[in-house]
Image 1 (tube, rainbow, N blue to C red):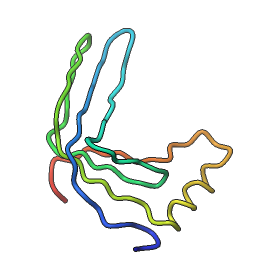
Image 2 (cartoon, rainbow, N blue to C red):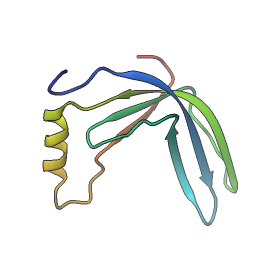
Image 3 (cartoon, one colour):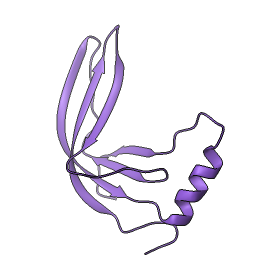
Length: 97
């Protein structure tokens, strides 16, 4: 067990993207019982997703989850206290590293 990062693992995920007058969002849902916590990183693999105005798309991809260790998790919570700040990091990549 590392203090900053736990071992990473791959998991399938579903990505829902919509761009319309009413909604502009991208949601990533990991398959299974994966609990994402403050400080964790999720990297979604594959080509960039392009959605035109008025369109929505649902895609299956693979993602790499890198859980934060106890020290990084505590630091993330501490630095985000009292602020509107994202506690999670999600990135999209076209390669495996």
